Length: 127
Image (cartoon, rainbow, N blue to C red; front, side):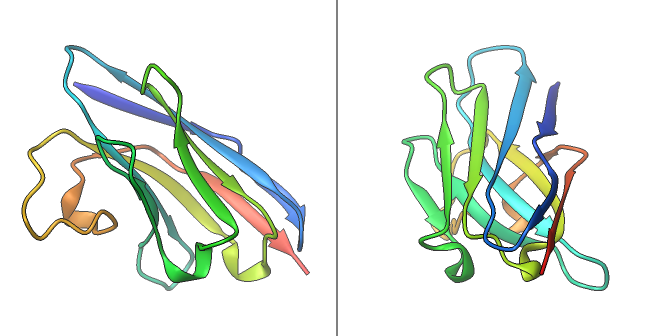
């Protein structure tokens, strides 16, 4: 059983920063890939950033240069540092994790690639 708990969301003005945290509670010594997704009302859930088992990150184009995904040394915590926030970044942000072997067509930011999800943390950016 795996549990993901997000924190760090809030309300900021455009240009501000937030740091989201995701803590994973799991048994065993499996290795996980992680990702941050976001969803705003009326829109599909979008993969924002991912980090694979080797620590290699990927980002959606709109997040490049502004967001940074990282892990702590225990690999139980995953962070999303978000700088230069824009109103269009407003969404519920979800942490996701998966320990299955990575398929050849793994992209890192597809919903189907993750089988564990947190409850989400709200990010609101005002103009």
